[in-house]
Image (cartoon, rainbow, N blue to C red):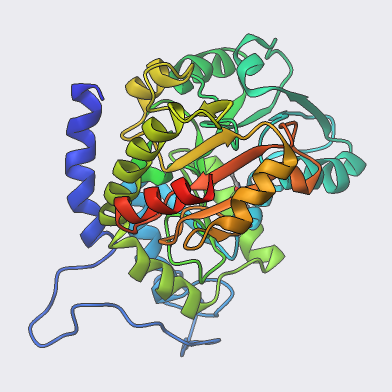
Amino acid sequence: MSERSTQKSTSLRSTVVHAGHSKAEQGQPFAHSPVFASTFHHSGEVDNQHYQYGRFHNPGWAALEQGLGELEQGSAIIFPSGMAASAAVTTALLESGDTLLLAADGYQPTITYAKTFLQKFGVKVKTAPTLAIPEQDFSGIKLVFIETPSNPLLDVIDIQQLADKVHAANGILAVDNTTLTPLGQQPLLLGADISMCSDTKALNGHSDVVFGHVATNRADLFDAMALWRKLAGNIPGPMETWLVHRGLASLDMRLERMTTNAQAIAEYLQQHHKVKAIRYPGLISDPSFEIASRQMHNFGFIISFDLGEQAHAEQFLQQAKMIVEATSFGGMHTMAERRARWGVDDVSSGLIRLSVGCEKLEDILQDIEQAL
Ligand SMILES: Cc1ncc(COP(=O)(O)O)c(C=O)c1O
């Protein structure tokens, strides 16, 4: 990691514990509680200084958005899922005749959403593989939406360089930062206009809430996405908001354990004779290592490794005792799945995506060893 990113992550690592919590008052609770309210007492002329109605705002949203904004170095808007957050970006910012460029190997429902619900209103949808995106001609492209590291193959592209190119063509750059969270990478500081995250994954981290957020430094983009949330009614519940805020405080601790575990497991898998190929940005031999070292605060907790054949991958998943077979990532529990089972990813049939959790390293290694 560069000195610059180490310094940033050091201060961020304390910020995350306190994010969104105001200074404790004498005799007041230290922690937030969820505020269950559909409406608030609001007399006289309508003003925007006080809470009015539960679809417009909620004190718990305000606290979490303040905390996420501190981490993202921008203004945050929360949503009831990562897909609602990504739909806010594309739906609120594009209009008929605009062109949207998506990563072909990015999260597939984002592409399906654009082709199903935006194309019919005249938005042109283009895709290109993550590694080919920096070489595209950006003239006439309104919004570029990438995911770095990509998932599950963990390709990494230079956000700063891409932002310069997109901005030179008057476009907007949005980064899906789900695999790293704002503690692992800060897209806005690297020049992106929007940072988006499925907080269902590591940010909440306990595999019990579906949630998402966006952050931006541009007032026009913020206003459009906030208005979309309010008018589409795509709002998070107070309980989920509180759970995510509670989970956020331990994000650094969890990531520290998960990423340290992941590095050791990747090094183990790399030398195992049954592993035909492996991707982890923290391996010096990995094509993503150089850019990842510059722009990421850690190398993440996702490893993709190929056991050559579907039968071998399935056998690994069945033999695993502690590792849970599941389609998500970023939780406390180590999870794995054969990605090609969804039939949409352009990945080999023996590829396993491993999301390394917080268990003791030796126990995860032992489980992997016996399953292999
Ligand atoms: C990279 C990425 N972006 C967005 C999403 C969508 O998030 P959610 O499932 O919270 O709607 C996911 C979910 O898996 C994801 O992996």
